[in-house]
Amino acid sequence: MLLEFYGEECPHCNLMRPLVEKFEKEEGVKVEQYETWHNEENAKKMREYDKGYCGGVPFFFNTDTEKYICGEASYEELKEWAIKTKE
Image (cartoon, rainbow, N blue to C red):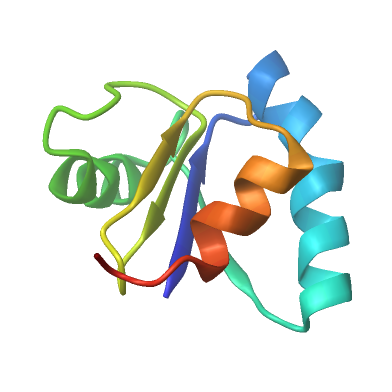
């Protein structure tokens, strides 16, 4: 499962939005998105996955590989994060 945790007003998160949408469309996969700044339940869920990796948004987590991205990333980095197999 591919997870994205973001803040509604976060400029870095907003820059990632078109990349995530492009990835979903091109690869035919869904990135589950959770807004954390205005939703405490989602913020709690992010802390469970974050485990001190990032401490902020955007935070991307791949539950299959346990790979993560902190902050902004390129389209290629996003794609590699999503499809890379567990080592």
